[in-house]
Amino acid sequence: MKIKELRELTVEELSTKRREIKHEMLNMRVQQQSGQLENPARLRLLRRDVARIETIISERTKAAAPAAA
Image 1 (cartoon, helix red, strand yellow):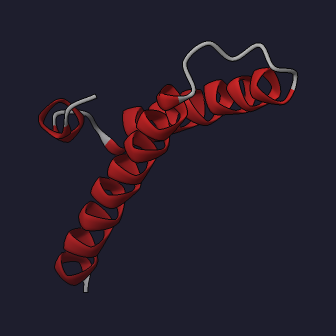
Image 2: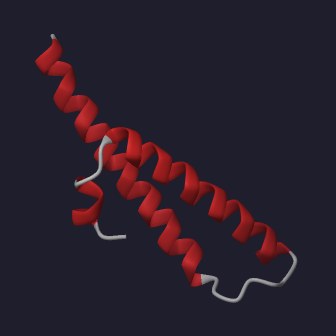
């Protein structure tokens, strides 16, 4: 997923997306352990997507904190 698309989402939507991706990663790791994973490079892409989402969430919470104080 592109960073531009992620920045358009709300924090709640980002959290939901992160949860879905982590669930997909869990399923893929199980497949990998059983030798059934067809595309192991997808795990790396998902891990990077999670990092992007967490970065955007932290940016927004840091930006909101000084405004509230």
